[in-house]
Length: 77
Image (cartoon, rainbow, N blue to C red):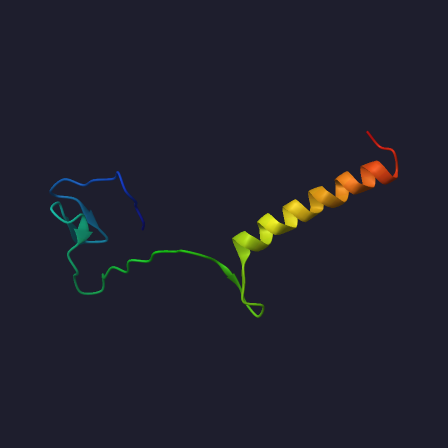
């Protein structure tokens, strides 16, 4: 389960049997239920060590440039 900023729980709320502490908005660990906080800052393409967001942005820019050049070369408009 996940939730982000702006989501608040009052008293009496639990996730898989683990109560949510209304003061901290985090679960109170119980046997078999723990929490893991993850902050994702980037996606790296495995084996190439390339940031996926940067790769996609560059690919889009270069694809647009190719399309514009081809439009001029072949008189497409």
